[in-house]
Image 1 (cartoon, helix red, strand yellow):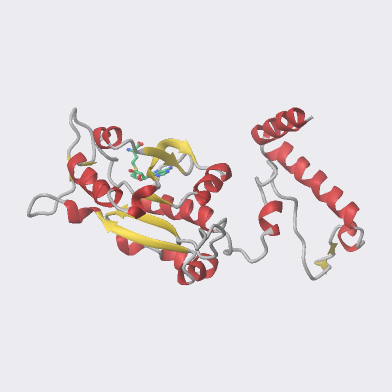
Image 2 (tube, rainbow, N blue to C red):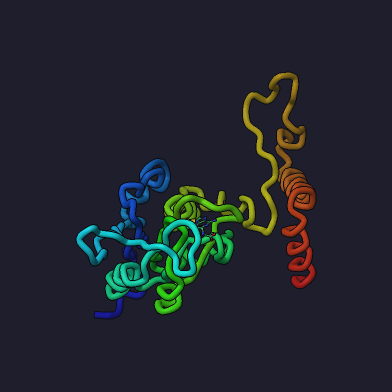
Length: 247
Ligand code: SAH
């Protein structure tokens, strides 16, 4: 028998979430597109309760910070045991990411990168954060969902997973939708319109009802460029640079 190279079945993309609140998952990802994809086995979810790795009878996972200061810090021994529990197994093959405001900012390129891998292991912090040694010793990456502070990593993990799951093959029926949306071409998306064609005295832009596909494409591109230039000078600069290097 020959090797089955073009295999038609592939293992589901695997999300493993280490958290003190496993009941927060799949939460919103159990609904709509992501929920359907979960039921259809396009992705799988496993939650690991960090508290199961506590070492004392009080099941404590945190302690006061050395050097003083407010709040509590997650213990390295407890967290590392939870990480080792999953990374010794096939599902732990992917990247291990700690959701953290200090991390590299999540963007569409990172979401795309993660969607191409077999899965990811996510660590949700609580309190003031986690002991630095656990991050250093286990080579854990830090990823932030934005320049603000959340009360825990769970909502950040949901954001990351949502961004990745919708990119998995078969989740969004019309793959073309992914090529047009914000960030796909390095631009924000053009404005969208639907029925009614006249609403509160405002008609939709004429070109969209012209049936002239070339003009529509050109109008949308110009709109996307205008919007990006006005709202996101940082993206616009990058877009210009990459357009230049493409020649
Ligand atoms: N003292 C920390 C914040 C702790 S917030 C600091 O100043 O950096 C508690 C937990 O919420 C963190 O451990 C992290 O897992 C999560 N979190 C908070 N803001 C986040 C963000 N912007 N992106 C990703 N995770 C975040």
